[in-house]
Every structure is written in structure tokens, then in C-alpha cells.
Length: 116
View (spheres, rainbow, N blue to C red):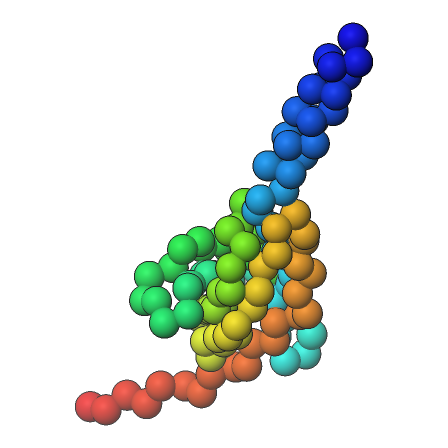
């Protein structure tokens, strides 16, 4: 009976450790006035990479939440029409932890000139 209890405890411990092998990231995207920016595109890239590993879109309140992230360092790219693209470099995700990001502030882009 004692061996059974020890085996069960080991299985539960291993199961808990395996379940925490990924991390989470969440935050909000805002404009220069602090108002939320819905439908902004969030992309996670491996530093130096060209293709996003994960993409998401902010919700109606400008919030985003990404889960199941491998515990590595990412670059975060945020894009929205009418705003300048923002890139945050070297954001580290740890296993079993939710990284609560500071608000990401987008700057209004200048109007493109039309040459006729």
C-alpha cells in the first residue's frame, strides 16, 4: 500500500510539472490618449525571425491573451491601420507563469503623401 501511495504521488508531481512547460502572456493595446485599440494584430517572433510563431488580435477592449507559449525569448510586433508598428524586443516567457505586459502604446502614423 505504501509503494502505491509513493507511486501515485510521483505520478501527480510529474503530471503537474509537465503541465507547466508553457507560459502565458496578456496585456492591452492603447492609443496615445490611453483608449483601448480593438482589432490590433499581435505577432510573436523569434528574435531575428521573419515569420510569426503566434498571431492574435486584440478584443473589443484592446485586450489580448496568448497561452501555450514555449518558454523562450520573443519579439512582439503590434500593428493596426492608422498607427505606427511597434516592436518590443527580448520579451522572456517563463514556464508555468503568466507574463502581464505593460500597456503597449501605439503612435498615430502620419498621412501618406499621394504623388500624382
